Amino acid sequence: MNWIATVYTPANRFQRTALWTLAITFFLIFVGGLVRAAGAGLGCPDWPRCFGLWIPPIRPESLPPPYDPAEFNAIKTWLEYVNRLVGVAVGLFIVATFVGACRFVRSDRTVFGGATAALVLVLYQGWLGGQVVQSGLEGWMISLHMVVALLILNVLLFTAYRSQRDRLRVSFPAAIRRKALYVISGLVVISFVQIVLGSQIREALTHISSTYPELARGEWIEEVGLLDMIHRSYSWLVLGGAIWFYRIVKPLEQAHAVKDLARLNNSVIVVQILMGAGLAYLGLPPVLQIFHLLLAALMISVQFLALLMLAHAKVAS
Ligand code: HEM
Image 1 (tube, rainbow, N blue to C red):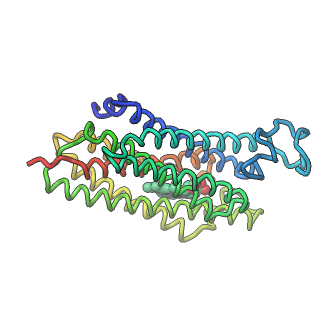
Image 2: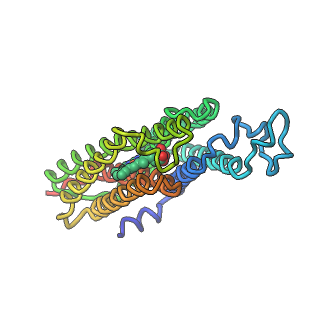
Image 3: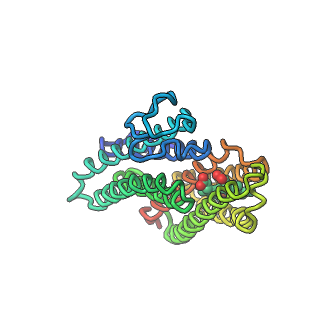
């Protein structure tokens, strides 16, 4: 996998910064999943401070008035607080990427545009995070927060790729390239719809758990009904699209990077379906909630990178 070695040996400081920014953004999605799985979204009841403090306490007796020490849970508070700290770190990395992109203003406006878009989106995301807390974790706001996180991830991916696209250029026969480009574009769209469907299930589960407190966790999923059926069945469409894409790029001798991405995409989707089944039949284990979300982010990023590579591929005869 020589292209992976190429990616990991960035040619300059900007590329290194952009790659680190991408990595820490993935980490933030992981920590966000932890917060959700632990039910720690309101671990800090206010925003931007936490219990009115910039650094929250460890013991309930250190809470300032008017907060009730009986409602304090140190683990949930610190999980949410660490989530916010990682969010700030992502913001700082994105600022660093933006500063680094300033030198591309003349040579490659698209790199600069990508870094600017990431900066605007992360500022919006910071504000939105505060609104999510103030809304008491309104379901559709959490979903919007997740969609913006995925958008930031892919805008960063685009910026990082664009700054080194000539080093990662693959070559494709024209007809195959066109077909592969259509299929991967369609796959990105249907995968995104699947992610939105998944977040609708998460919203429904939250609603069910608060409306029917007498139901055991393992029974919540039965109450979701049609939406759950659609999300499950739709997975076969996603898998079918991914296999189709792999079959198009598989016979090519060149373009190893795209083939590797197609293979990785297939594996991620299979694992994702197995984890979905685990969620549905094993009573929603929190660890699967975390990785189901993380792999959804990985899947869409892998597909988007394949799309970028194809869009920029050299046309071979
Ligand atoms: C390509 C395949 C799939 C993708 C990309 C996908 C994606 C997602 C996403 C993004 C979420 C929302 C997670 C969150 O907001 O925290 C979700 C939730 C969920 N998905 Fe899937 N999913 C897939 C397949 C499946 C399958 C096959 C099943 C069941 C058999 C399933 C069951 C669930 C359940 C139960 C939830 C709610 C989990 C929670 O409350 O955190 N998924 N899915």
